[in-house]
Length: 82
Image (cartoon, rainbow, N blue to C red; front, side):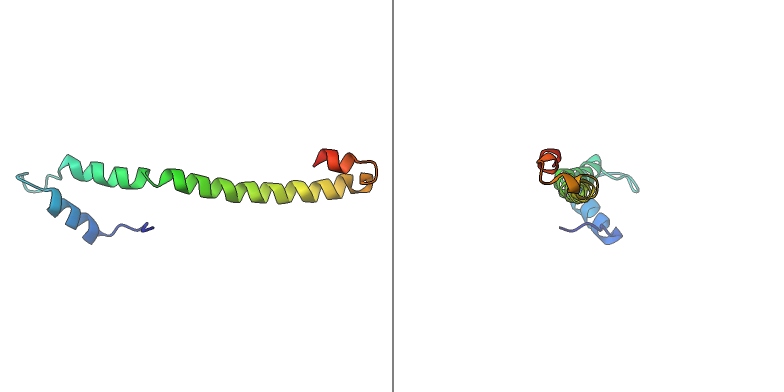
């Protein structure tokens, strides 16, 4: 997945999508193209980071359960807390 957008990339898209605009005017389609290309990746990025945070949280909860409720393992409380 390509994340960095260079000025060359931007210039190529402008050249490709330009028709008869005045000099210095960037067509609205160029803005739409870049917005769509960024927004379309948000779902995958969010899910990836959510999974990372979930793994970290589970590790922290496991460690806290062991630390504070480990001595209650035989009574089943540790199992219930987890």
